[in-house]
Image 1 (spheres, rainbow, N blue to C red):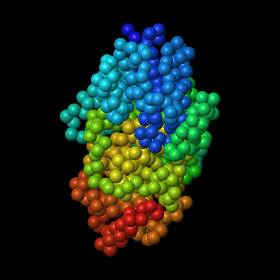
Image 2: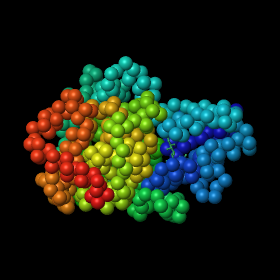
Image 3: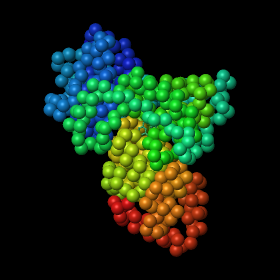
Image 4: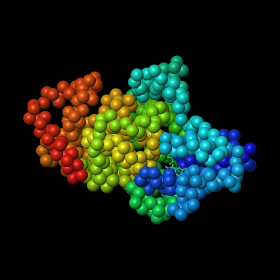
Length: 510
Ligand code: FAD
Ligand code: DLZ
């Protein structure tokens, strides 16, 4: 038997299921940097550097371990610009018995690969991606028959399944499943946030940086200051660094935002977990060990594990349960185009400027910036889901359809009708003021709502509440908002709506 084994750019793990039972003496591995994958969205330049460099390092290691590997380096003149093109070109020479691959993480490519058997005339074996803690079937079984899917209940199942932070009596460690209420402190500069973990680019990475600069000059973002790990060993160092220096404060400041610090106490591990350099379960186990060793408090460790074991697995389950229809959802009927400042960061709204500028420089913004700043603005302004989804897919080093889409379309835009979240994460400028120091440095005044220098989030919030009365008035978690809105004087309501209408009309000038 001789097989052709395809390894995708986000499958860079030695134990990837496609390699199970493979034989270096007769099987051939194929990896390819191709234009079709590099250009289906305006990928951030740093994401391209990360993936191409990590792919090259992974292939080099496999070769050193004795594997035969066909590796296509990116060039715009390559004869084959798609994965299908590269794979089909190898079939004639190698005449493999079958093609083996691990299921890919997005519908678009999954659809293509699923048709290869018929199109290429060779058996294609697509194996489950065992890096996830819950299989697609397990999630579908859990979801079956439930009226509403709530992450919290799925997360508890995953805690039981893995035994993470569970005591011998089968009870959650620390006495609670969830310490979310202890994750909401504002950060005022103390304790100081650790500098982000940096790896200096080696010769391979430098070569890829030149390639990206030469062939993708118009893609979003910059390559300057590239410091991501591109090997499993360096990604492990990044994990160790996080556990030692940031995890102890992760819980307290999980929802905080800062005008001066891009990374705060976040792990910056999602780019590595998503492309295979780190294993999600091993990351959770490392965090749990820190709690048992007394190195980090329970609100930090539980909060961190919940993000990976809970949210990450949950959104992946929802994606595969509901694709391809999920991507078409637009239950709030949004029609507004994405403002251009999402690509430039040139806006007088300080929080938006800071989040977008960090995104442009780092291919990273932390969760609360994504959810409560750039996401919240898109929700309040009624941006079309496909435009805002494409922005999020392009601009982050960790972005793949399976994780980006449910987070943006579901969690942020509520475009799925509340399937993923029981209420929209809509908030006025007050929330941003409470959780950050942006407002003190902003052109707009967060204390004002209707004046020309009033914070746009304030009137846009009430505009959102007002225009979606039919969608949300009956939601028990939103009733209070409608009572507050109705209690305001009619002149005040009118002034707020007028100000918001003006802002929406002049959105590009904000
Ligand atoms: P930390 O804050 O340190 O969290 C630890 C880990 O938990 C992350 O590395 C990640 O693996 C996981 N995690 C946390 N929240 C989520 C979540 N909601 N969904 C899935 N995993 C989560 N995450 C991506 O990996 N790719 C995306 O394309 C992506 N797009 C997002 C878009 C929006 C609008 C929002 C609100 C969230 C998005 N997230 C995405 C989730 C989350 O914001 C990022 O995983 C996180 O910011 C990555 O930074 P970190 O590694 O420092 O995370
Ligand atoms: C995101 C990405 C990029 C930019 N380039 C490649 C590539 O050249 N070759 C490849 O195999 N994969 C790439 N990827 C990842 C895929 O586009 C796709 O997002 C994932 O494989 C989905 O699981």
